[in-house]
Picture (cartoon, one colour):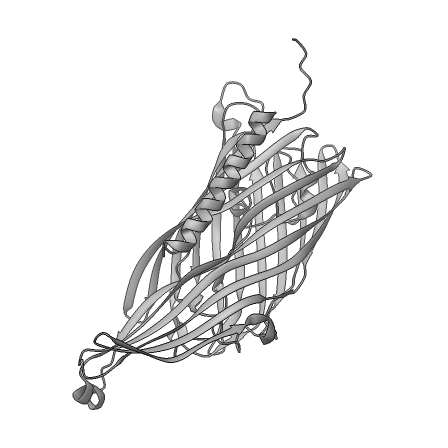
Length: 438
């Protein structure tokens, strides 16, 4: 037991170091020109198990995998089982706007979650995962002859990076073997930098450097329930619901503007504001789902999520509103439609390994929490995945791929086509067993 506990603390330490290094080394956790707005791209939650089924999980009960999308699902487990999940993601994206094309790839640690039983039909979980990511870098050159004829070449450059993470602790309990309820506390934390530069090739003009350094903090709660109804044989139907409360965002916003010429730097503006005074918020979220499963052999699920970002202040608060002339940014209602299924040919087959594997597929349609010049920024895609059993119990490696597209080239928008690879390490063990032999 001591060795297991020590192992947990080592894993937690490594995860903390990973998050810290990622925040400091200047790399991109995600990359998208649209992440210039608000708090960036909101991450799709879930382990590689959820992601390979289109992001579903609100009505999912599977004792072999961690499903933290609904805190009530933490009770779907073997009584004495300890479970952990560690995930990585790698995203390759091709961007297009008109005749212009570019590409980028980003790699990130995605989640780390632990769950273990508390007492009888109750269980506990703790974890950390990205909530949103900011990553962009684009530049342009002034082409107006009337301007550059006097000033020389002018280059405009904007870039940003950073992430907001969510650490959570939660617990759930099952009553009458059908109704499961759960709750969790979520702590948001992270740093985001958004920078804009104006550079003159003529040294007689002063270049400008301006931007916002954002330190974000916040606490909220999430509640969930699931109800399972037998339909006959080993087939059952599960309905689930979740609600995440609206969050008052706290922290600091440092706004600065410098003028540079040779080795001389003049401070034109430097101000530190408390975000709590800006009445800035993260929106609440409601989700509902329904699934039908045939024992541990197959499962199909459909989920719907809705979050109203209007009135959260994201489109009016300096640092979160647009920091350049990239278009008019307005918040709106975000919605997600997700569907997925899982099939295991024969979990107990002793001759053919691939019959014991879990095969998954899914699809999704997401409407973002903002509009650009009145245009919705939507994403859609299909997902595929497989879990490869490793050693004994429920240990395994989950591989997933997401083929998707965000926005389109209409109305001078930027289209993103991406292939995202997910890998999750599912760790399982049995605790508190009394030895049968000395």
